Length: 285
Image 1 (cartoon, rainbow, N blue to C red):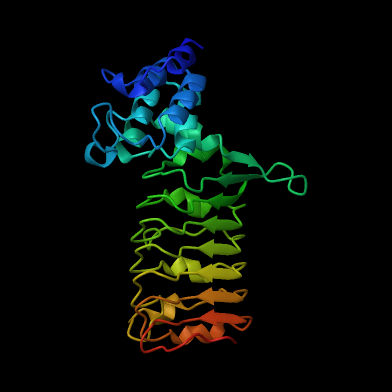
Image 2: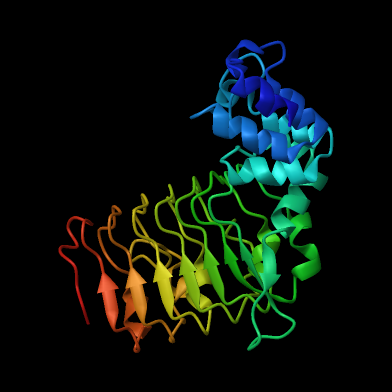
């Protein structure tokens, strides 16, 4: 590679600034050169724009990933996401086709014991937004969906209507609500839901009617009440009927009491309610 030759002769890659070499490689789609450059330019921030700004100030415009998406360089975009490039709301909105392909690259067969079914491993993709288009073709075959550690503020409501879904991890995001109260929860096979470490101030009552749900984690949110709260006039209509529930983590919220319908959880073996003054310390049943 000519580039390596010049570097071996003492060339300083940082002197190429108009545009920076990484942007030239990105626009050309040369992943091998990009890999080499990022190795030579140690600690280079892939979330800088071509003029040196932070992508947070431009919502992604002018970033390496924006450039790759603009040129439809899917392989380059995929590599940049692996290196920590942020899929901002602007990028998701302007290049939905590219983002859909990046997401679908991470949807894999569930395994030999589940022929015809799939898992979506979207952990740490730096996603700020996602559309249903990425999952539409897997609506009846997706059994596991992992959104852990992204920047999502909302989710497509269709996710909660996937009949084969068994495990949903939306922890460590920026969700203020999981979905609207009027969304129908048709994912009747869901057994595990982790919505911890978000900014949830409410929880849809549909969760507590899921017949197969065995594990529910809502810790580290800002919940003050739950569906069926004693002070809620609609408490009777929000009765908890998820009788299969075995593990419930409500710790680190602002809950003052548990709903009366909590007594319906006859199979519960683990309950964590610490850091919910005045509920008190952790409880194990």
